[in-house]
Image (cartoon, one colour):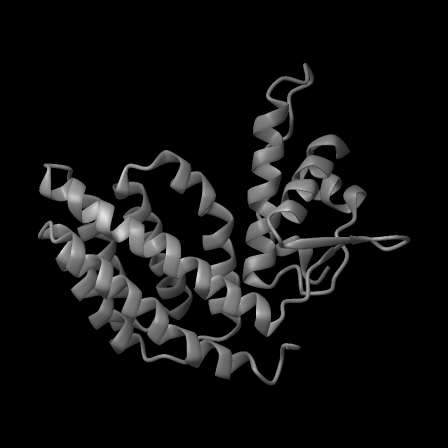
Length: 233
């Protein structure tokens, strides 16, 4: 692990052992953030004892968190090496875009439908404003984070709880991949987000679907090109 001291600290666990599931979730989120931001580099080992000391928890929630990270595609486990941050491939990136085309287009259509039926799009508007401010200020790390939050909000606005649970690891991978390479102009991204969010906020489901599809597909080739020299096929 590189620079593990930079990862946020967890709250020490209570002596009575309650809230095991909550602690495992907290460790999951902290390690995931470390992977996505590059604090835990691809190919580095995730040692239970080190993570346990780092987050001031027992090894049980750490073990559970690592198991979840493996299920979600961020970690691989090998004999004699233990848990290791996965090495992404170009196939992984392509598959991510394929799945996004299926799920996020549906989410955009349903979000627009629900807005047309009276659901509030206030949070989506707030995120658009925050994204524009981050682009204007040149805060590129914030641009990536807010972009993921914006896409997450579209899924939440769809009202489909199963979809919301299904895309959580998907958006983690989005942040991971876009943190490694994002060769598209942020101004283009701003324009596409503005058009997509406007269609949703105007309650136009089919237009939102089409704009979501083009936004995702237009991002595929620049990302693949940016990662072609660093990732295996």
